[in-house]
Length: 212
Image (tube, rainbow, N blue to C red; front, side):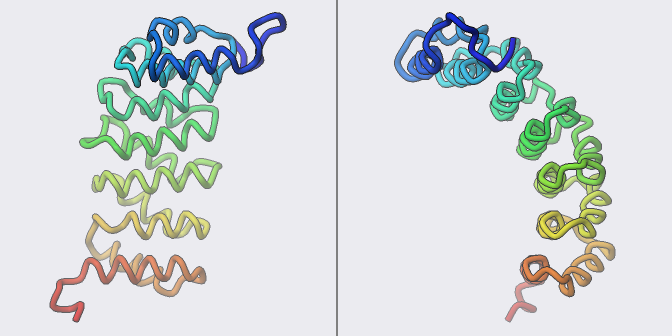
């Protein structure tokens, strides 16, 4: 499979339209057939169509997560949020940054977290080369609130500004001396949005009688 429509095939876009129609009012069998289409966007649309029609099986979802195109893998990751029996941890090490970002978001939506997810998210948050991936991983760790993810969130408070802002917000479910110190440091950050986030989190976590 590749992402280019082969010469002599149906007009570009037509199979994708058929897949989209199948998801709303057509035959889900059409969408299932188009899962094998050579064009990645058509496969991704067919996948979404099956999900809409209630015909997306676990095996099909797992196959989509291993699709050669990141377009399909990314779509499958989002759909896998509602299927905790399908592992997403391996996608946190995907070769495509957009898939990693989507997988981080998806892992953060699963409560309780998938086994191994917190460790994998921590690795992305502290070591991934793409800033958006680090942001997504930090946000997921904050959403999960697992104490094992706190060291990575604290480390992210010293990352670039966009990641620092996300990390400060992600500190909300945590407590302790290290958290308090990180919030105090963030109040003096050179980025005003980091400072504002720290003030907001600090205020929100204070007892009501101290917010008067």
